[in-house]
Image (tube, rainbow, N blue to C red; front, top):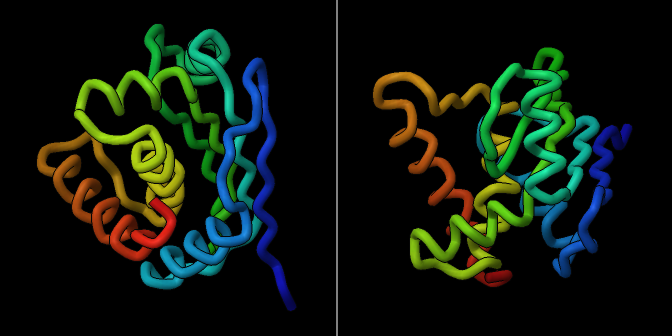
Length: 144
């Protein structure tokens, strides 16, 4: 049975241009590489004001971020809702000297990697997350 369902919606921004079918195949392959199948993934692309509101309301954090991931994973099937601020994606791309497209895909997979159990807040975890992001982006080179 084909369980995966990946949806993309927007809140206060226009839908970014990207190949949804290639992104779906890529996300499925990244999940499989980490021992998971994909269930329902919902990506909500938004602006900084929206992500700040979500961060305050659901997490009690009063700051901007590029992504907030709500994890509904059960067993080996990853599922979740992910809010991505396209404003922050653009700012971060400029800050680190990369393209908007590459940063967009990095954040897209960052949320999935969280659902696969990879964290980035504790000692040494950021480096581990970045390693997994880089490996995932290597799979995607033909898109970016």
